[in-house]
Image 1: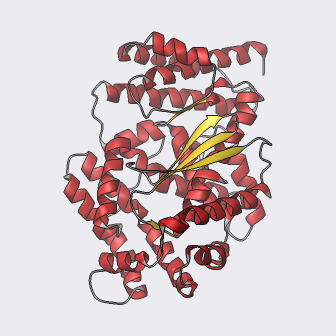
Image 2: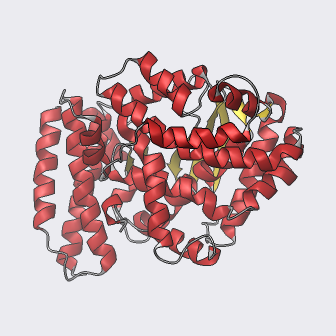
Image 3: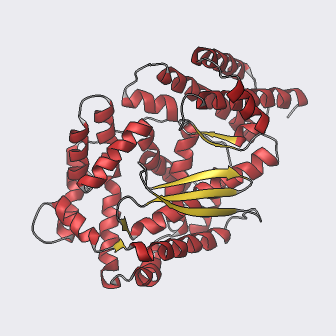
Length: 413
């Protein structure tokens, strides 16, 4: 890369970071992480910019980025250019929303996350529910039976920390076999209340994360691996460590000292974090670890472990029901009660969990697509490159390439 081109991109990157920080003055959720120069954050707080000024500066930066010719540069630099341009475009959309612009669920998802969510009708979910009906005999509706069945696998508060610590340790050890982690990487684990989410990774920079687990509702056993892998290894913690090490520190790409939550980066982050669960535990390895290690720690009967695993596999395919509930709720077609009832019927959630989920819709809106659509796009991208379940080493190789690159959702082809 020429010196002038590098200088120009670094200037655009600094502008982008400062604009992200400026938006954060209006949106408490927007800046998910920042570990860049402290004076930039101080300057932003001291001189808060009006939304219109933020938008105009972002539009100007985006125009200049679009005019920047990177066609002769290495692929990584080309990805960087597209990343900055698309992230700026999403930032502009978020500013417009904060200023009062109304978008439909699908318009918002495309503008913020660089992806178009699919639509599913009731018949799609009903087919899966019929499969569960056969796996869980008894009286009552399928949602009631599934909820009562899953209650058998609730982790008590007394065993909760031991179960999570074991899950995180296993996820970390499996990840270390395939990904070289920074020597100083570490995390802290906290249990919290009154959140709209079940788990969260707050990346602090210098290869450190704070992982929080929400204990408002009873925790089912499968969530231990889900959250340990998703929030930790090889999910968010590893993803952020690699971006900081490879780009922010080694290359000096300052755009990676911040993470704008409502942006295309989130679809990559959430999609790889979810698919990372399958990367770390291919085939029946998850079932075996849960049955032989976590079930005894949680003092649960492991005789039902295999059937429970089958139930969870089908239940996971119902995740797109969350998108349908969010779409109709946020578009004003449904009330909160309507959306919660849909989640009970087609996502097979308890009324309490369904209501909690609608609060997530309130706070994060179309962000829900990043979990299921993100996972599916990442899965397809990696498997198309030979990383299918039958080739676990290649799967790790392609996974590592993806989480250590600035590739966008629209680039997952």
